[in-house]
Image 1 (cartoon, rainbow, N blue to C red):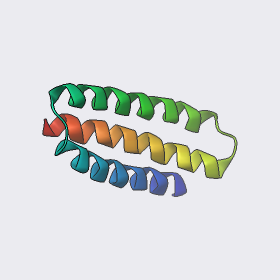
Image 2 (cartoon, rainbow, N blue to C red):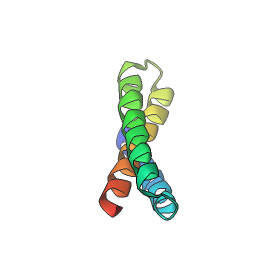
Image 3 (cartoon, rainbow, N blue to C red):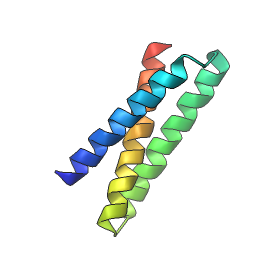
Image 4 (spheres, rainbow, N blue to C red):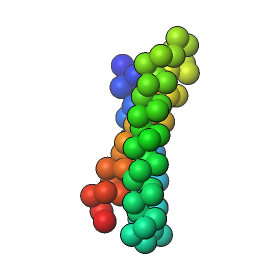
Length: 78
């Protein structure tokens, strides 16, 4: 439950961040934003998987999901 909760919190933060960013991005900035968001998503997902400290793993999965949802919302909206 805690992992899903942290992931859900990350999704909310990422969605809010993406909504804020969408109003400010031109097309070239959009491409960079999506690329960076996917890199954050992947890197922190790997960090989550390798992290032995449970509390830090929760932070990493939240950041990973925030990156994933930012990429998804920005990509869907442009």
